[in-house]
Length: 362
Ligand SMILES: Cc1ncc(COP(=O)(O)O)c(C=O)c1O
Image (cartoon, rainbow, N blue to C red):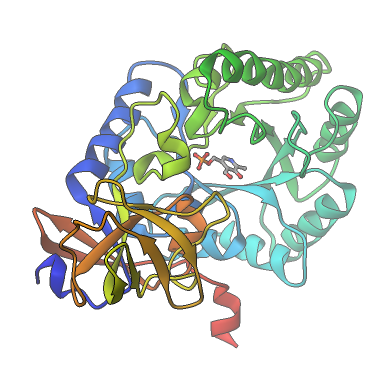
């Protein structure tokens, strides 16, 4: 099948570019003590995770949800899994305990509530679940305050049956996207200082802390170069998006949303079938690939309205590609990705962990 024959809207992966990205990340960590734990949430696609793991320098996979971890385990991608997120909500801890029977399962925890839920499920299932203290390093989201509070939680984890304290994590999501390295670097270093100080306190209290997990695509070489950080949870680097492409990082855009031109009502405008239901705009409108001077004016449910240079020859029925601004939520809208080499579709990959799998199982 040729690229132009793919039913649209659809996700297209430039296989060669993606493999270069994966190799660059693996090469960066090769030979050092810090590993990369690719974040599965970025693409939710087993075929990509397999390539990331095969490239080397990996400690395992990171997941954001229990559903992703279930796919990782069911597909046998790795037996080293970290859910770098709180597992709180009906039935989730029980599902994690089930997974812990067949893999080295670790979960981030920032509350006594979450800890007790996990520990209870682990005891009922007769398993042990690894726990990382999730430390707030500056992103106003999850994570317990660094320092004394983090140490208290570590002590509680260590004294709770059914779980084992394995380490600490802190995600510096408030800085990963800062375009200027001169600002990104000191802010990432400061954020990691909060995590590493907490790690020190935990170790000085005689508690185990084998894993120190942090980082993302925008900080892989900053956080990943810091003494004491054992792994980086980067996800976007494999496929990239226009937001991350603004940074000075050595990863290429390898992923686009393919649409078809539905209408060209005026020389300076067209409408394609790649609207909100095909690509997200939470990090800004997507860019238009391959047409100099073209830009997305706005998205509607089923349409992307695109400003064109009037001399553009693009016509109704032609393919048109958009570079998404944020890959994770865009990918979650689709069922498959088309892996393309030189305009030829070489593989079609199921996005196996997209959506909320538990709803499909009902
Ligand atoms: C907990 C956590 N770790 C790591 C990442 C890094 O992902 P990326 O490489 O896409 O920046 C994210 C992204 O949101 C995250 O939520």
